[in-house]
Length: 184
Image 1 (cartoon, rainbow, N blue to C red):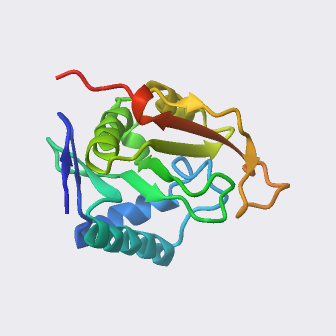
Image 2 (cartoon, one colour):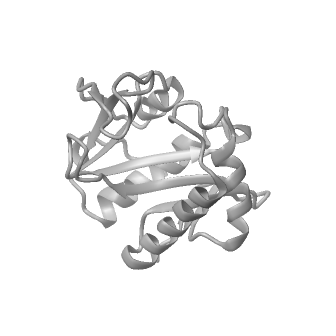
């Protein structure tokens, strides 16, 4: 298993102590504003377990994000194989979900840039995608800061009622040849 490190963030395997702050994160209406519903404690624990299991098997995935100085659990940042039912599958997605107390400080961008380096250099992926509800301007801003390009393919998320306000999603992509390389 690979841990990733930035100046301020550690991306690591999930721990039992992450479950309670992850439950709080997934039930927070501010964090979950662009999702159809908050997660129950059981659904949150199941998601954490799926993340942990995938990292155990593949060596990568949606890593638990921890602030280096405080060692506080922040949420997750990482990679996930896009489900077959998505209109742009197969693909690997980069995603993040951080507690709102960590928003606005560049943590998501910083950690995601490290994940992109891993995706292109270690996994040798040719392309990474990211998608979100059209209304999720914060995540769209992160995608742009990562150098991702709007694929100009709005789509209705197959798992969300087409009449729901969050059904319309946007797709962003980044190819290995167009990536932004971190300066050392």
